[in-house]
Length: 384
Ligand SMILES: Cc1cc2nc3c(=O)[nH]c(=O)nc-3n(C[C@H](O)[C@H](O)[C@H](O)COP(=O)(O)OP(=O)(O)OC[C@H]3O[C@@H](n4cnc5c(N)ncnc54)[C@H](O)[C@@H]3O)c2cc1C
Image 1 (tube, rainbow, N blue to C red):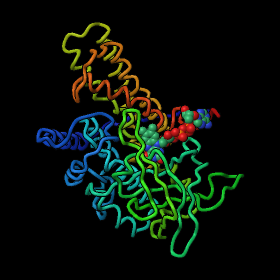
Image 2 (image 1 turned 90 degrees about the horizontal axis):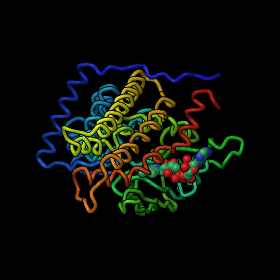
Image 3 (image 1 turned 30 degrees about the vertical axis):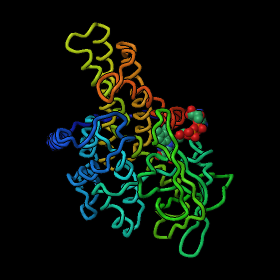
Image 4 (image 1 turned 180 degrees about the vertical axis):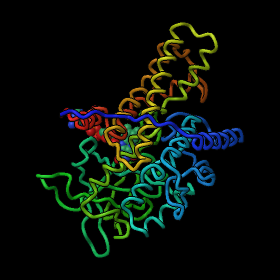
């Protein structure tokens, strides 16, 4: 039997629009004062001082309880803040994972001691986390992960390797998915646990991996008898798989999945000017219409999260459509307005287009590949 996916329309209210005006004002002033550089794929770019200013302004951990420094705002409020920060092309990589998913994970599964220790510095924009899921031979098939921890007095000894870890070299902690009991061939999802790894402690080596653009974004981490104290185990031993799956719902649903190449669209509109040709007007109209629809779906997912739901399939569909859209932006731009030979620099249309073209292949890989997401969506629809 097939199941329909629905995206109930959500309207952002006057409180959210007031918040939007406030955030936009903060960003405009910060930019005007030379506070940050505009760019694309904001999650991959970082500026630690900017993250601290964002924290000081009260824009991180906003949905979290006040006792941990949060503001107890809704997911719709968070949506507006994130949307404005991304649309401004601000560098959010340092605090991104901590704010989006490590904090919510600790709120859901962490101990009170962990929340008190880890959440306030995240809210201040001073503490950064990365995601330790993928390994050299485990990406889509995450259940084949081999990084393992064995029980010792007072904690766990961790050995193995994680790979493709975004910005681990500037993070303080990783939340790693590790095997804490041998593989059960009947159920490979059993026997995983999540642990907080201090990336600066002995027994962990963070090695750079350079991407297609020649940038140091990824890392490989090698754990050699690294000691994880019991107080750094997140949730229950053996429940890591279910915990990771709930984390992915936060990872896949946000406006970042539709805005990764937004600055290219902005610069395309500027480059075309007030008198576009028919082809240009049609292409820009189509890109804008798609963005508007995707944004409606993304707001709807934020609304479902605000209602306490776990819209895993709905979020997967937004990620699949959104990241394909983000790839479509530079492709369309290149066709209707080819870059001039030799044009470069750090700003303007040519620079944004060049950057977007280089980053585009990664968009449909990170956070779950296109094929994996489509498999999940098909399952969610009852088609497989
Ligand atoms: C920019 C970027 C940032 C990343 N950051 C992180 C991070 O911070 N932390 C982290 O843990 N990981 C991170 N990753 C890793 C990412 O999660 C993996 O690359 C992704 O899950 C795919 O795994 P893989 O690279 O091993 O490819 P594979 O799993 O080997 O897949 C290769 C190809 O085979 C296809 N395929 C695989 N299995 C199936 C199947 N069952 N059915 C159909 N097709 C299939 C895939 O869709 C893909 O096209 C990042 C990746 C990128 C690109």
